[in-house]
Length: 351
Ligand code: YSA
Image (tube, rainbow, N blue to C red; front, side, top):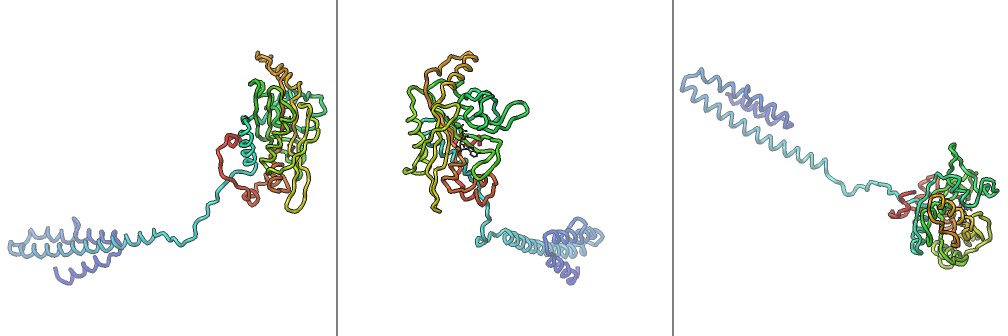
């Protein structure tokens, strides 16, 4: 082959700009049907002397082309590697991506705090059901169907006669049906009221019920417990006030409030919940139901106290939140200010 033609092939090899292109050129000249191979096939027609000379010439061409292909391959592979490294380079000076991190809702945190405080006083957390019946939500709590006190709890009734619990108190009955005294429980959870919403009232909110039953339990035990929890929530100098109040399932009954001062200089008594000494009629109703279930009557002669706290009211008080509706409008600008660490407390699984 003439020198010029050989140089042209070498130029073609050098001009290939990718490994694929190089492979095409290689096949064209060195492949099975390539130029070099076809020249080798032609050699059969030559005389022995010519064959020798031609053979040497073709082999030299072949070696030179193979060398050039190999050299070009190395160059292209290196370039491909560099391009890949470049494209994958990490620029550590770029601003970091922002991944928003979630947190516990403020009400979940209040309930978790309460669970911790009552837990240290020996209370066990139990969960009730949100869909309740007349018997547990009202009748067994000394609120028969004709009792005017039913008006205190505007109720969402379901078409099958059941209702959305209006308070966490039905769990008092359910727990006493299954357990005997002495007992101390708290029941956190959602409750529902068919009422118009305003700055301090929602139609769905959270309560924490408490029940302690034993022997010789007195009103002073109740007052001490509530005062202890209020100070745990709002600080050691918190003032707590009890005022007589009426709940059919306690006698005597009371509402309790804490003295609330905010940075704007406003201050007032803010009601947190209701409480009282468990009414003997409630113990009697529980014993009647236990008897009907074939269980011994064990509550006659027992004494105990119960209370129900509003979790939203506590959060409003603690953080100076002026309107209860902020909690469930899900505005992250509001809720994000109260984000807490994730805790694995049993009540959180149910909320
Ligand atoms: C009373 C005596 C006991 O021995 C045991 C429990 C109770 C509490 C009773 N079951 C009850 O539900 N009382 S209550 O209707 O006055 O509600 C208790 C607390 O829930 C209130 O003090 C208030 O803090 C909160 N609350 C009531 N209605 C609310 C509300 N919070 C937000 N929105 C509403 N609509």
